[in-house]
Length: 102
Image (tube, rainbow, N blue to C red; front, top):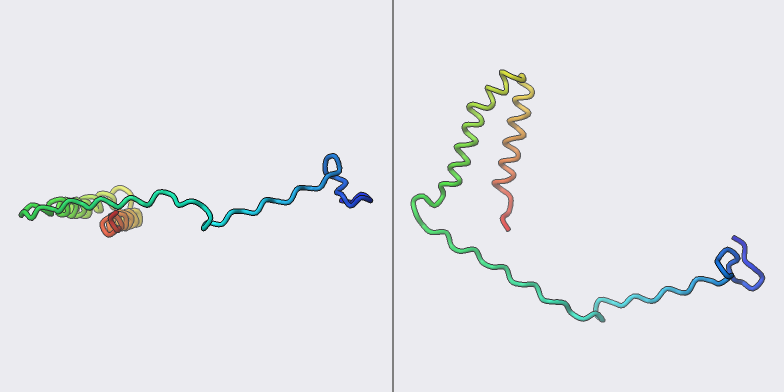
């Protein structure tokens, strides 16, 4: 764009220049927000012979999926699909089991 003889921008409305932006306030100048609430501790797991039954249930599900699901997938869809499906299943389950708990 060209400038008018007065030094103002010829393309802006009414021939006025843009106002200068306001300086931003620093983080130190802002008032402090609420402090983070402490996380509630999990209740302790009772020590009983059946305390870890859920983990073994999922191990049983995985074993059944391998013993029944893989041969069935192999018979229906072929070797490549069965292997890819088994790897996908194992990857998802292993990722879920080893993920950090919140």
